[in-house]
Length: 205
View 1: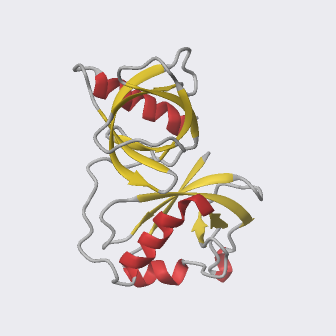
View 2: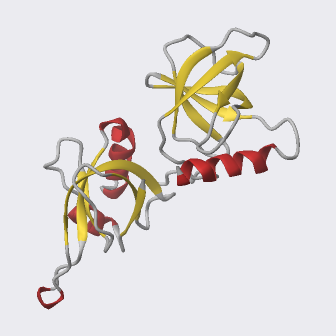
View 3: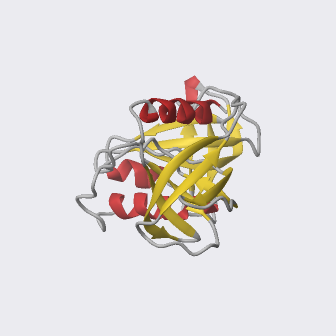
């Protein structure tokens, strides 16, 4: 999955680039990398008032070559994923001044859709779920099962190129649409290092 970087000098520039006519929103992303229609990409958005660079999943609608004499840049029109509607709305709220002083995250999150298994900390009964928006600090666990904030669980996931599933001790930190926000708990000094490597593999995969 290709990463497209969209940098804006101010909020107004972002709003000008944003395409509200698309049902899920989107924008033109300058890139010389030839892309095909329906290619899946990640768009990294940043403008001064945004506390963190924000990654949104998207699908290429079209790509054009550069026309230097006409001042036309090469790039792709990208429609954002409907699953990232919460992020899209946050970007718009910050850009329009509806949200001010947003708190900066300690760790940037990577949008993913990854099948995992999880279990309660003192149970062997595993349940299937999905992870979304992972970082070295936590992730979003999508599950229909009922869990309580503060409850300890173990999440098992396999990264691209990984031979075996890796178990990560976690805690339910908040309730999200269709699931929960979880915080990863490091039981030893190497936990953070291993998780950084997993996030790197997910980025490549």
